[in-house]
Amino acid sequence: MSVKLTTRQVGDVTVIDAAGRITLGEGASSLRDAIRETVNAGNKKILLNLGEVNYIDSSGIGELVSAYTTVTNQGGHLKLLGLNKRIQDLLQITKLYTVFECHDDEAVAVRSFSS
Image (cartoon, rainbow, N blue to C red; front, side):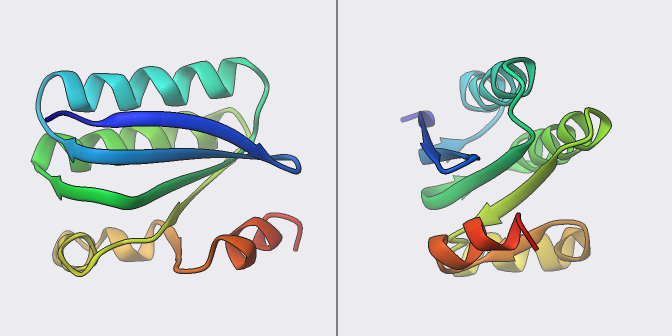
């Protein structure tokens, strides 16, 4: 199963809920498309909820970095929510934990955009 993405608004923050696998091919490209559409629509505060993602491969990690770059270059902020142990470990191994702001609680994450 590839990734399933749903987008919703919480105040002025766009939350993208991801479920499934972010892997080479369809999973990574659908994440890329969702981020681009969100940024092109003028949304600058994006929270990527990975709580239901059970697997990310190296191209999925590449897409997270690409998404971060895309959003940041447009003057926005991308934050991650609900990382499982495997994804946390992956971000630490790749030293990306220092790049992404990660949260466990959605309300705290949404509030962090306004501080």
